[in-house]
Length: 319
Image (cartoon, rainbow, N blue to C red):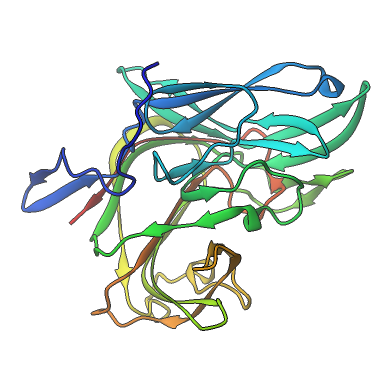
């Protein structure tokens, strides 16, 4: 595939349309029609197979065990990653393109078990939810400890859309169980895993010690609790501004990050530090960053219902 040396990583403004006094602005590469395909050669200890990983971005092909520079050619990253732990190379893929029945491509996100087998024995197993997000994964991943510390979450963004719009379908198990698999052993626990999409608009700043703080300006967080096996096109979810805790439809998981921060970002020195949300912004505030995540599971890393899946296409904002 032809390699493109540079493409802007922010919003794609070339194909803006106006419908019923609303302006629709697609996110760059959010129609999922182009991909960078990576071929990772796993270590001989793991069987020496070639693993195919996908990046939502410009058409390109990359051979060999090379760390991908997210945030340069595309604003998107995902749960696919190249890992190299103590010289052992592995690729993980839980997000991949799939052709739609009506033509074109979408992204399919799967909750699955990723297993590392050494010398014919199961060594490590982790539950992975297929996830797309705006931000940067720091590769190669060198361990499975606190995966959020390997993600520079969110991108600069200073507009205030009314809503997010996309096409979707999903397969969500009704079972009230999920798998907890953190490495050496796995277990079944109670709970109902659900796909979700969320948008956080933040106003961030950094203190003299390199700590990153934020106020939450806008919020949209929606969970998909049951099967939707036929495509729903132009599904639209409003973004609410200011303090949303007094809304009648407010849910606890839509609130501010827990103490210490849920996600991380690079400070000016290039160090990864927690994003500490310290309150709700005023409705008139302008955001500096956006967090957008689309995932087949609503639990923390290494928890999930194996077999859940979420298909997503044509992600755009409504103004």
